[in-house]
Length: 428
View 1 (cartoon, rainbow, N blue to C red):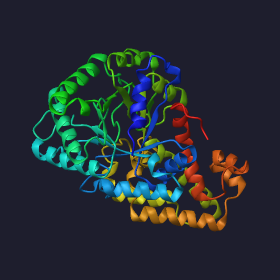
View 2: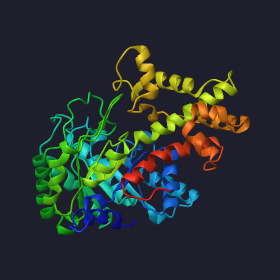
View 3: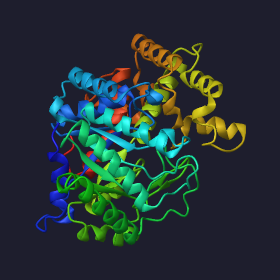
């Protein structure tokens, strides 16, 4: 896997001959769902552009995470799907997100960091080339927010372990001006962009320590800073990028040679906002729940068609409701309201906590039954028009096969297409 796609982002950002309007970005696909991965890899095979696929520390780690996968397992899953859809392996870039003690923050600091060090070593050994170092959270007995110096010391230790496992293999992202993995649960009406002073201070503290401990070569591969540009999504709200409010933050890149900004939680942003983010230097755009939200929309659209064709069949929504109410750990505490409100949010919230339940055996079986039955019944035009109008138009125009699986992949690909446009690619 090559580092050139990342280094090229840095070069163009600091090249005076490249105007902002010509900047290109890179989408970070943050999902472990096989259909999301398939859609992303199909698009890469078609466009011949690199595809960046990232796993978070809670999702994938040496203990399996909530997916049950180690970093090597995740790599094998991605590359296996890539081979199946004809995507050359050299186009696939693997990243690790929020790599640090977060999964073990209930433990004492040294114990949590020991596990984090083991985790990042596993990511490095598995060939991941983009590593986000995130040691910003307090562990047992510590304050929630740690000092820049403590965060930098722990990030440096993480980078040192990754370099010991795979010297020179990865680029690094630092900084964590975003919610912890999983998205925001609080109200978003007071969201503020990162202050330029805070971004500069974070960078300076890390640079001093990294250069002293790890040397100039490693620091030269610290290419980006996670900041809050003023975008976020919650349960039912989306904060759209407000360019003037982030102007001073964007301008600080002029004083940060070798750096770009990474924007988390860009899900559900409209195309003009995504494009403005790239032009303003937020060249790495992370999207995850927005992709599984599109997956769920397509599945529920197909489920609605089946409810007309096979009215006696238990709906997919009913199956998912039963699973989520029997196992509430992944949504309880994230949603609030009456029982009827919770029933809506479990399925339709922007934060898309339902995504944690698709790997359940009962959920997988229900999806497979849905797809098999619709292959048998067929998908009549009037019902496609009623429940899946975007895909109906593509089917009618001969651009999409009349197949349930193809419809799901198309729904996900539509979102990925917006990101390609925002990143300056010609969309196909």
